[in-house]
Image 1: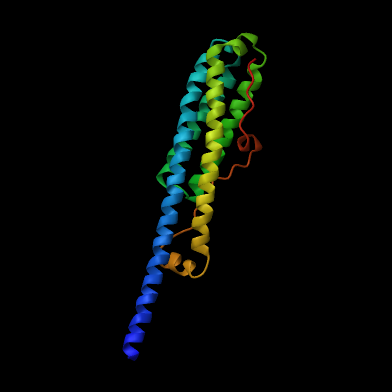
Image 2: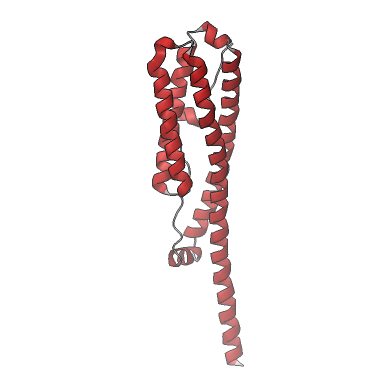
Length: 195
């Protein structure tokens, strides 16, 4: 009788450990899926920017440095996203992504500020459509980032709370990093007005 009770207890412990492990895997997959949504929206953002710069070139011939800064910032953001895609949640990759996206937002802000001085550019229909799409994409990025950060928090809580912390440490689950944006301009969609 004692052996049966012992085996029953051991079986319950095994099921409990398997449940904790599966919960960690599920939470990790959830934040990786949430990052995939950020990837989609940031890729859309990055794809819109060359069209915006190309359209603005005709009007901003004297602002070559501003346009070049936007393209360089966009390229850095594309590289940051590629690194983060390889390992979503990795602290270094997420930091680089945050910094590169912040730089892109700042350079776009400078482009929009400079463009205010060019009435023909402000009246261009293509520019208006592109900036509207960009603003819409910024909103989608914000929602995707929130969903990702929520998923990371759930995963990290599972990794840090006992007894999950014991299981996480034993099976190599490491803490994921949320997508932190330091610059206030990235926390809010840019205000774009050409009319």
